[in-house]
Amino acid sequence: MSDSPLLTSDRGAVRLITVNRPDKLNALNLATLDALREAFMAAADDSAVRVVVLTGAGPKAFVAGADIAQMKGLSAVEGRDFSLRGQRMMRGIEKMPKPVIAMINGFALGGGLELAMSCHLRIAADSAKLGQPEINLGLIPGFGGSQRLLRLAGRAATLELCLLGAPIDAARAQQLGIVNRVVPAAELETQTMQLAEQLAAAAPLALRGVLDCINVGGECGIEEGLEYESAQFGLMFATQDMREGTAAFLERRKPDFTGR
Ligand code: COA
Image 1: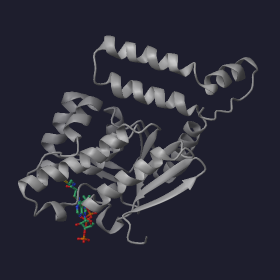
Image 2 (image 1 turned 90 degrees about the vertical axis):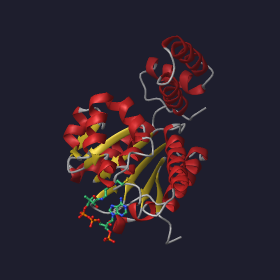
Image 3 (image 1 turned 180 degrees about the vertical axis):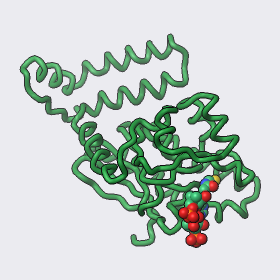
């Protein structure tokens, strides 16, 4: 499928999904939104995949935003549907039952930053630029940017990025809590794969428990969140991996987690 907007490959238990429109700086058109949705659903369902890494093709961009050429002619109803289509795909990533790492290799602007924020961890090249520049187009974020940035970095940073529309560099994005790690561009892939392999060796059901607790707890009150955490904690005692992890600690050996 040479005309697919994505490239997909497996490195052991790590699935690498690459947005592949480098001549358009990997801008998200409808076909790319839908291909991403399908690719993530497939990764969720494949038990051989324990971690997903998402990146953009070429040396310049992770994703430089929603496809402005495609958006230009949309009606109001089509604009809403375009937004809903992107939001649905990104919500699917956020709710993935296995960790998703955004490997930010360049521009992550507009829909690109929104896509990265729907991932669970973000590791950026020191040369990356991030921002919500929609205001410069007479637009606002439409793939969840105003909401996820608010939850990730708070009101001041969200208002600054969305009102002014100016990109920030990776170091500032880390200060604001938008990215987890910043590494030299030449080391981005190696360091991301090291992180992915570390996660791939962890207990999959425990990883899922953490992801579920954070997803639920981020949107509910403390009482419900604590209750949910206890239920998930209890569930871990039904897993072989919990027996393996505790036994391996006591026997002073490395655990071998199987996801059961
Ligand atoms: N949608 C559609 N096409 C895009 C795009 C987007 N979001 N971002 C870049 N492209 C295209 C350009 O139109 C250009 O295509 P062309 O060669 O057919 O003319 C190609 O990608 C290369 O981009 P270019 O602008 O020439 O690269 P640059 O290095 O000079 O600038 C950016 C890079 C990222 C600063 C600039 O492309 C930009 O501002 N992009 C839009 C960012 C944005 O507003 N995103 C939010 C959209 S809601």
